Structures are given as structure tokens and as C-alpha cells.
Image (tube, rainbow, N blue to C red; front, side, top):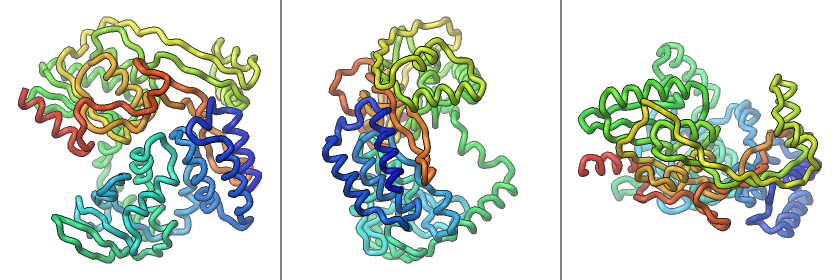
Amino acid sequence: MKADVDSLVQYIEETHPNPYYRYPKKKFQKDIQQLKNELNTNLNEVDFYLAFMKIISRLDDGHTGIDIPLNSYLKKNPSLLLYEFTLSPQKPYIITGKPYTTIKNEIPKDSEIISINSISSEKIIKDIIALNTGERDEFKAEYGANSFFFYLDYLYHAKGIYNITYKLNGKKQKITVKGVPYQDYEKQRNLKQENSGNEDTTDTENYTLKLIPEKSTAIISFQIFDWDGFSEFCKQAFTEIKDKKIENLIIDIRNNLGGDSDVGDELFQFFMNQPYKQYDRVIGKNSRLIKERIRTHERNGKILTSEDLAILKKAEGIYDTIVYEEIPIRENSLRFNGKMYLLTSAQTFSSAADFAQCFSNYKRGKIIGEETGGLVVSYGDIVSHQLPNTQLPITISSKLYYNVGTKTDDWHGVIPDIKIPAGKALDGALKIIQNQ
């Protein structure tokens, strides 16, 4: 496993444009050496992951890290607390959401968790933040919420019993909840899906449209920027918006972790009224893993571009800067010219945050919600690889992006015009529309 530590450090230093932009190299090297000294040869891959992530998370790069080895963990059929939770680095640290499908609801929704098995919610959040990558603690906490059941069970050895102290309407209460064996949950969920046919599929759609005719308002939710179904959805959605003479459009990217930025470029063609660009410039670093990625694409049938061929010929360690030109507006009979509102949160990350910054820079409408988890100057364009021994999947940033309208030291997210908790952003937008 020490060889895996050395390999990942080598991969990061070869590939990342500047991995030590927040974490001094000498401190990183000292922490890595201490980790190697403490590594036990009998560690399983989950223990190795947890030990390593405490260091990697300090790089503060949401695109550089190791994937949680959940599959090997879940094979042991742990008994889990299967609820959705909202996590925050500030009080209230943990807020209860709804239970997972098929799970009996025992913890009241919207209750504030004070402690679990006598461990304070503040400590739980600090531990989770320390094990997740990202540029902002708000993003690390919210991203960690996706695997809250894992951290709760594995870090604190709950063994299926969860003694919970929570507060609701100003009153503290206690409850003991028994965890659900993961394999039992999977069987119940699969059975429910078989019996309900396609009823649950709308919950996982990448793009959805909702109309509120009485408010002349449309709400488009984008869960991810992906080409699958995108073009057809936009054509249908903006046709309906035009036919219904909708005057207000809300775009919801609060839970959008990113994807293909070209999708964002195409989406802007449906409501931008001037030429635009998402990036001022991008600095890329050529590396061995970048070349391996290109060769893998070629083996999978991709025809290499002139840019790909040029990269293969370049020496490793070379930096290139690409300066972007604005994209002209095309003729589009479905272009929306009404009022717009963009909803953001700490979970708005990567190309979704880039989209929000472009929207803000060209003043296309009001941004409502929280500062984005993704920064307006940030590292990205991940290179994927595997560690040689544990085979754990890793990702490493290969480029530094300067969003449109940014300065060199703008290490912050997109700041909303109206700052309110993400959960209240939609109501906030609808209230503005009602009062205008």
C-alpha cells in the first residue's frame, strides 16, 4: 500500500498544474511520510482510503481525489441509517430529510440532529469535511451527505444501533433507531421498482420542466450537464414555453455537480441575447496520464483531432494557455427573452458553477440561493486512473480555468444576487415573481 501512496503522489505532481496552491508542498510531503510510517500492512482498502483522504482532501481540489470503495464495504451487509440529511459546516450542522425508499420514517423531517451515539453533530461534520475533496467546506459537507450512512457506520462503529438526540420546534428529544441491513434494503427497493413499473423514473431525470401558468412561470431543473436527451428536451421545453407565452423562467442547478461545459454553451443559445463565453482562459499541463487518456480514446474508436496529435508529440510537463473568444448568437426561433432567475447552492459545482458565473457576468437575470461550491477560478478537466495495488479509482485535475469576468486571485464561488438558504431559493424566486 505504501507503493500506492508513492504512485498517487507521483501522478498528482506529474498531472496537476499546481497541486500545492493551498497546501504547502513541504507540509504535504511531511504528512505523506507520516502516513507511510503509520500504514499497517493489514489495512483493507476502506481503511487505506480513509487514511489517505485525510491528506488528499487538504489539497482543496474537488476534482482530485480517490473514490470511496463503497462496493467492497456494502458487500459486508452493514446495518445503516438510510435517511437523507443536509450537512453544513455551521450550525445547524445536520438537518434530517426523508428516509430512503421503503424505509420507515422514525426521525421527524426538518429536525436538527444534536448527537448520534453521544458524538456531537459538530464533530461528525468536521470528520466528514476532512474526508471529502472540494474548494469550500460547504461543498465538502454537502457532498459528504451523499455517503452519510457510510461515515456514520464506519467511523464510529455504530453496529446498527443509532441513539439520536434531536431538536424539533425548540424541544430536545431522544430516539433509538435500528439500522437496516443493506441487502434487505436493496431487495425491498428492487421489489418496489418491479411493482411500480416506471413510476420512479422521473426522480432521476437529468432535465425536467414544470409550468405554473397562473404565474406565467416555467421551472427547468438541470441535475447534470449531459448531452443524453438534452437537445430533444430543450426543443420541447422551449417550444412549450413559447406556446404558453411564459414570461418568467427559473433555472434550477442547486443539485448540479457539473458535466460537459459544452452543454452549458448550447443552453445559453436559448436565452442569451448577446455573444458570450464561459471562460476567459485555460492553462493546461501536458502529462503522461493525459497522453494515456488520448490513446485510450483512440483504442475505443475515437478519431484523434489535430489537437490530440499535437499533445502526443509535446514533452510532458509543458504548459499551454488557451484564450477563448465569445460565442456568437445563432438564429433561434425558440429564444426566451423574458425575465430569468437562476437557483444555486453549495452543491452547484464544476461546469454548473461555470454556467452560473457566465449567467452572472452577462447579467442575464437574478441568481438566488447560496454561493456555489465550485469556484470561478478552479482546477478541472479530470484525468482518471487506478492505483496499482488497491486498484482504487482516482481522478486528478489537469487544467486551471479562469471563468469569464474573473481575476487571478478570485478563489471564491459565484456569489448570488439574493443570498438565502438553498432550500428556500425556489420559494424566494416565486415570491419575487408574484410581487413584481
